[in-house]
Every structure is written in C-alpha cells, then in structure tokens.
Length: 412
Image (cartoon, rainbow, N blue to C red; front, side, top):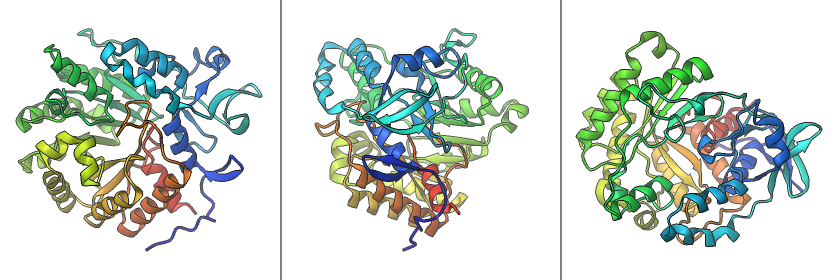
C-alpha cells in the first residue's frame, strides 16, 4: 500500500472545530451539510457574480486555494422543496431537523467568508456573473433546469433523457429527478421528452464561447432499451462534433450511460468524441444497493456494469472507464472493497459526496462525520497513485472530489 505523506506542501490547511483539516475534507463537509448564506452576501455579490437564490443554478464558491465547493443555501433550499413538492412528498420536510448545518457564508472585511458556527474558516471567492441561466435556445428551451455550470470549467447536462427505471417504480433512492419521474408515472402523466440535439448544441456553444468552459458532462436516465439511449447519445455527440472549431475547445467530454448489452456501442461513443465513459455503480455493498439503487441491480445487473467498465478500461486504457461512488451512504469497508476492485481493473473510482438535502436514504438525511471523509481521501489517493489512475485535469466539479484527491496525492 502506498502511503501519502500528509506533510507534503499541497493545498491549504483550515481550522475546523479546533482541528486542522485540508481542502478535500472541508469540501466534503460543506457539500454534505450545505450552509446558510447571509442576505448581505446576496445583496453585495448577486449582480456581479454567479450567486442566485434559485437552487437550480447550482451555485459554487472557491476556497482561497482554488478548491471548488458546491454552495447549497439551506434556507432557500428548504423553501424550494416545500414549494415544489407534492403533498405526498411533503413528508420529506420532517427530516428538516437532520439538515442543520454549522456552516455559513458571511461578509468579512468586505469579502465573502466561510464560517463554522462563529469561527472564521476562510475568505472565499465567487465565479464571475454570467447570463447563462437567463438564456433560451432558438426553440424556446430554457437553459435553467436543463444544464448547469459547475466550477469554472464545466457545463453539465443532468438528465437529458428520462430514467425508465424510476418510471417503473425503481428509482435510485437519493435521486431527486428519479423521484419526479416515478411520481409522474404513478399519476399516469406524460414523461418529459429527451432534450433535442439542436438545443444541447446551443447550450454547449454558449457555455464554450460566452462562459469559457472547456468541459462537458452528459448524463441521462437509465433505460431499458439500449438502442433508444444510443440514438440520443449519438445525436448529441454528432451535433457537438459537427463544428471543428467548437470541438477543439473541448478538453473533456464525460459521458454517463446505462451499460449497454452491446459493448461495441462503447467504441462508437469514443469515435464520436467521448473522453471517458461512466457506468456508475453508486454503491458496492450489494445488499444496500438492492434497496438504494434497485433499478440498476434488477434491470441492468451488477455484472453488466462491471463487464462494460472492464471492456472500456482494457480497450481504451486506465481511467477511460469510471464509476461514481456516492460518498457517505455505505459503510467505509464496502466502499473500500469496491473502489479497490475497480482500480485493479484500471477503472477510475470517482467520488461524489452524498448531499442528504436531496432525498433521505434508508430513512436518514444525516451525513457521516469527518473521519469517514478522511479515510475516503486516503483510500482514493493511494489507489490513484498505485494504479496510475488520473481523473480529469480540471479545476474541479462542485460535488465530486476525485480531482481534489488526485491533487492531494500528487502534491509536492
């Protein structure tokens, strides 16, 4: 086992409840707990920076060492939930007492600063203002609700096509979109159509040219029919690649898919411009996964996920296949077993911090404590070094910490 020297000079250290912690740990804590934003911060910065009261705009802030952190304002988030949830789902609000956060964003010496309780942690910065979320495509499709900006480098499409597993009554328990699809299907209402390729291209073009993003994340729901999903993906990739000048600006194009029965579809996606392909397991603990991600276990199966991930890694190289783990839901021991097994196969285990404020999992909205994230950080850092795994070389995603862990592991 490779041991990472914690004395290396890498990212900044911070004070948290009389302890010294690093950026990876602080990011995981804030992402998993959210924070409360003082009204004065909105008044001072919402006109000049990317700071919006609408949770769909996926706000973020940067620690003073540049680490990008999701900004979930718990005050507005709970109001948003109560406003959009149907009566049958208002029971989620009974978990509000579990969603208390010690973190806040306040003004400190005329700048936004992160506090834990009343203790100053760090002076932070906000990305510059953009009109991205005020845009519509030529067909009238609104950017907001269909795509988000993450950090400084990414435009992400969170659900380009419907999750058929959710509509069949087997959504991932943590997934807010899946819950919506399930509710629509139960009420026998029409499910939303997949976003058209022309709309995707307009959004990508604006992000690349106006916001100066360099990376794209394409995500959809899980499908029973791999042929229909493949048609969506082909249409998006072909449209994005149609203009060479635009294609040259793209550094990473991450593609999240349902593992297909036909592995040759993976070859097609790489030929059309995908940089990496994910078939995300989310959890390794199989008993827990049957409860939390039932559609992936019943319909796709664990075996097909592993087969497609292994096929991709063996044919295209280490780190070209990756799988998200939702960090904070399963016991550390099973997470360690899963991440290690994937890393041995050349598959990048990615780390997305569980945000309990989305939906309760196994009857809880309580995130783990600091020591859990510390163990995850050391585990993934050692795996990345030992097996030569490299996540996207960007300034970071809002809730994912694999790039931050890689920086930690390779700091000098």
